[in-house]
Length: 355
Image: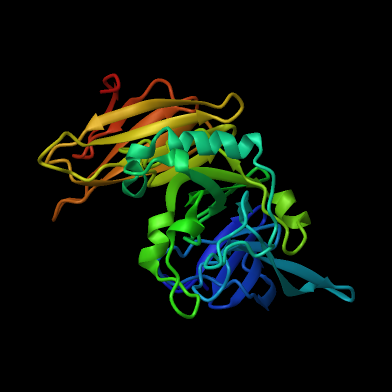
């Protein structure tokens, strides 16, 4: 029923959902098919192929080049005389907030709406400006001469989402568009009124900050087509502000978010694998595990959660070796214990403090 590298499946409560091309099928856990229906926002085959199913809804970022940015949602519609027969309708939620009129070459403001520059926008704008040295396109400009034009979610689709207790979690780049306050006096238009990319780059640019986001599943279900998606930015490492903490894996367990970064090995500096925990009730974020990597430690790390623990699996990537190092943490990130080393030996020893 499930074909590797072709289908992708999700378990939501007592049901199993399977993608196959542009078809989404729902099964009971004992394998009985309930329905199979065509969807519009089908799975992308490569490069950001994630999507999520919750309460029969299917959702992913609209990444296709020819379409305006947004969050694509397939909405289940049941037949009155056949409740197990479903037809999907589509809606797209906008993902950009504009605080100044868009330039004529900017196609992301699909609603043609300009909002007030509120405290939410100012807080993010200040965070980006205060870290201008982290972006090459920003660090050599006098940012006092630039206005924030928009904040929006990139068209880059995540590789995976997580649906946990009424929320959808995903790691997504947020785009900040800035424009010279006097751009019309500095830009050169050609004879037909057009402008080339070189001229645009002189007066307008975009930087991206990766952040952990979550949205309420109920809000996605109730949102009208064309309305703006309402997302929360979680206090977890934000790349490139936290330059060495690009999140490569994450898991959610109750009110805790666990994120993991795995730096590429370099002979020039000590690279680390790091695990952070965010208490989403208080907003506090802490580093709970950090281990310096050496040339012999070539592995692929991944996080797993149980009801009471979180586990860091580090699979050996050395040719001919199938070992796996396993470290266990309490749910709150405390009491790290090395359970199994690369040799397969059960160790059960406390882990050394964060390096």
